[in-house]
Structure formats: C-alpha cells, structure tokens
Amino acid sequence: MIAAVLNNQVAEKDLAFTIWSLTEKVEYASAIYSIVHDLTDFFPKLPQSPPEKDLRRSLEHARESIGQAIQEIERDPRLSYEKMKGASIYLKRIGR
Image (cartoon, rainbow, N blue to C red; front, side, top):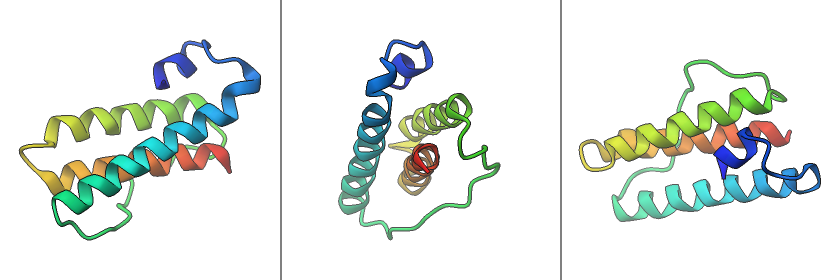
C-alpha cells in the first residue's frame, strides 16, 4: 500500500482512507507483536522527525522502518517492535 501511494496509484479521494488504513494495520501488527513477545508498550524516540505534512518523506520513513522491523523480527524482538511503532508514528504524522 505504501508503494501504491508513493507511485500515485491511489486516487486523491481515497488518500486519507488509505493512510488511515495503513496506520491501523501497522498499529495492529505492533500490538499483536507486543503481546506475543511480552513487550512493554512504548513510543520510541525517532532519529529525525519529518515535517508533519510531508507525505512522501513520511511514507518513505515508514516503509524503511517496516523493512527494518522485518529484518530484526527473529534476532531482536524489542528493536523490531520499536521499528513498527516508529512506522506507526510516521504514518500518524501525515494525518495531522
């Protein structure tokens, strides 16, 4: 879904719903992951905050964080969870 938005494959009228849907999916995945791995819910400090309304940059940061979460899923569950939460935060900033 992130790639579809970045490649302008989502109609303007559907953009807000698509971003909301992405955010909810990442939030849900991180919540389930937290329960399965018995992790404390926390909001990670993000290295650099993209401008709130910079759609492309926020989506790219979210995609990068999700990719890192997948890479760390077996090796470091806590870091993986942190990356998922980071992706969620980047996505939430778009809607503000």
